Length: 260
Length: 159
Image (cartoon, rainbow over all chains, first blue to last red; front, side, top):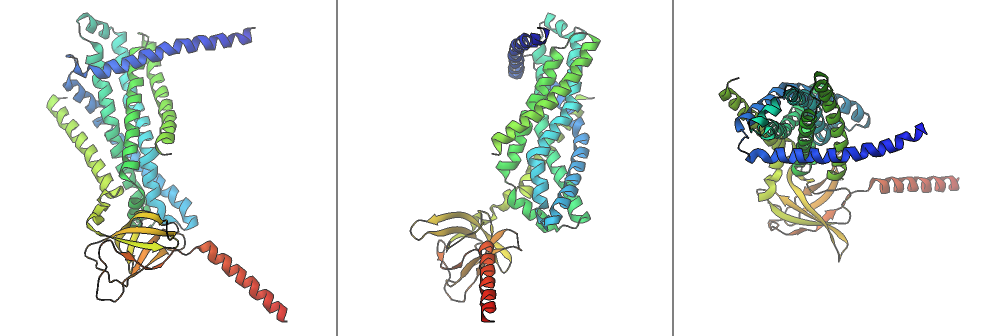
């Protein structure tokens, strides 16, 4: 009978997770809407965009550059067998704009900024700073959470656009001067096969969705962490793991919906 | 960090994002490719357009002078009706011909225009009548194989 014990356990877990999802959704909506709250400060928002966006810039640029260069190399070796190296520009641009740009930006963002966000909020909770704010009639959702959520949502698409551009430039540097693909063909093929709304804007829309999801998960994990040193650590790990897996899963769904 | 410096950095960051989007749109997405918007429209009926697509190039002597804007079907003649936009500075005589060629063996298909010699020019919206559709490589190989087979059986029969 002990073996069958996992069935009611599964039921209990499911029932427990549904109110959790509801609470997390309410948390997201309340935080996002508290831009209209008097405790929301644009100064804080700019400070967070600086922390999340500007300071992730170097990481993104380096990662994008290498991703683009590897794409150029790999694409070349696959295409040269068929004498189709003229399609290399299209391959590099479409891979980056549609999939790699948004997904890698979101994954790096989850590691670079999401983890910091969870650690910050959960240690604020552990040291009872959030309770102290409530005591002073300051809404912690408006003062602490909302600027961070909005900063993430604003930063990720911008980082993604920069990632795409630098990645394509890296692919160009490997394809044209190093591997000897014709430069005119590289750009012309890219331009005739990439559409602005279908590929570029859709990719950035994906990045926007990922930005919401990653910062939401990070903030929620921080906000619900157990207020102990161990709880802070656990929450930070869980935040990165959950955010990364959710981004990958959501990417599949978005690709199936947007590019089918 | 000083608040003013943060504001500056965030401003630069947002500008960088916008700049990246603009460069992507112009250089990668070819949003500037609406250069033929000012061009005039010509039609041409083909028996077979092969894999020609909208935005395929229209060339004269290898130089791109326009693009395909629409491909439709003429329900009366069952011919494929191709609409294209040509640069306004290019004036074509009325006995101009159009053919669909392939770039290389497996490349993209494009419309090649052979200008004629008549003094009158095609008016915007006119239809090019002298056309040659896309060559179907499968069909060609098939014909070649069959004619070879027929030829060899004939030669073996005469011996």
